[in-house]
Image 1 (tube, rainbow, N blue to C red):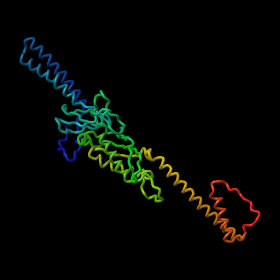
Image 2: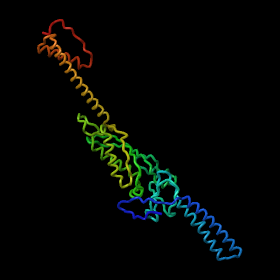
Image 3: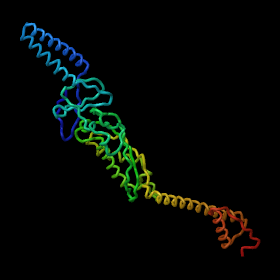
Image 4: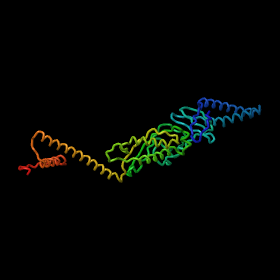
Length: 338
C-alpha cells in the first residue's frame, strides 16, 4: 500500500501513497459486518438451543470480533480528500506517506494524520495574517494540509534604510506547500515560520537600499524607484529561508512604503525644496536662452546698437521680468540711459 523507500532524515522527501479506492472497501466491509452479525446471532441461537456448542461459541467469537472490533477499525482507514488537499500519515511514530489527490481512499487503519498547524488557535498566531484563518477555539482540528495558493499579509514594519532613515514597509507573500513531509516534520509551525522568515528577509533587504535618492543618478537602486527589483530580491531571499519547510514562494509584492511619521514632515519639506530648486533652475536656463536669443536678433536685424553697459541693463531687466514670480510693472523712461 505504501512505498517502502527509506526516508533520508537529512533531506526529507515525500512518499506518495498509492492507496486503493475506498468505496469497494466500504461495501465489502459492510457486507462482512452483516455476515459477522448473522454469525453472532446464529451462534447464540445454537448455544441456547443446545445444538453444536463448540461451533456456536466459535461463531459468536468470530462474529463479535469482526462486527464490533475489526469492522469499526477498518472504517478508520477510509479517507476523503477534496481538490488541493493532502494528508500526512504516520504509522506508530514513523512517517508512513502522504495521501494526495481528490477522492475516497482506504489507507492503513492505524495510520494517523499529522498537522501541527491544525492544533493552533487564532490566539496562538503572533505575526501576519493568512488567507486561511487558524482554527477557532472549540473547533475540531482539520489535519488536512491545503495545497492551494495562499497569501501572507505581514504587518507593517518600521525599518531603517541604507541612510538610516526610519521607514514603514509592508509586503504580501504568495506561497504554497510543495513538500508536505518537510512542512510537517522539519518545522513546528510552517505558517508561523513563513511569517517570521519573511520579516527577517524584509529587514535584510531594506537595509541595503535608500528609500529615495536626491542625486541625478537614476542607476542607483532605491526602495521607491526600484520596487519591482526589490520585490524580486525579497522573493529569492524568502525562498532560500523557507526551503527547509517545503514551501514555494510564488510572488512577493510591496503593499505599503512610506517614511515613518516622526520624519515624514521633514522629508516632505526636503522634497518640496528640491522641487522648487529644480523648477527655478529650469526657469533660469530658459530665461538666459531667451535673453541670448533677443540680443542676437537685435544684432542680426540691426535694430539698435547696444554697447556693453546697455546690454547689461537689458539683460538685467529681461531676467527680472522672466524670472520674477509676479507680472512686471513697466516704468516709462522719458530720458536716456545716461
